[in-house]
Image 1: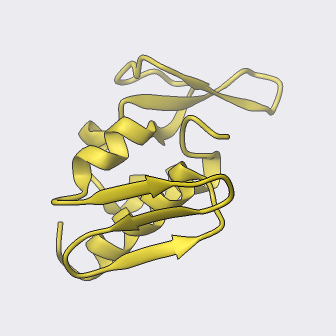
Image 2 (image 1 turned 30 degrees about the vertical axis):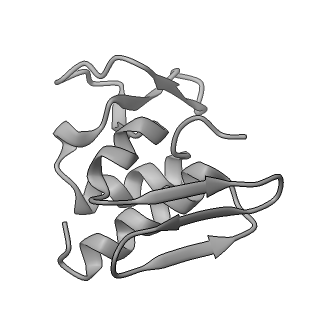
Length: 105
């Protein structure tokens, strides 16, 4: 189970959301493998992009309900539903992208 967005998801969110909504950041370790840091440091030359925890993503979703079962995660708002076998981070990521693409956030 993931506890934050992966690097690809983070890059997408960095393109569509204000960076201030990220509560973490992806940074380079100098060896070509990025790692997530819990405290973003503005202006850090090693910072690659923002990174979002589940809590940070959920803050972006208005009026949501989330249900987690063993192999299924369901997240819904008044206008959209994501219901599939996935991780909570993946479901919240998809919901935030959908809400942004449809000008609901």
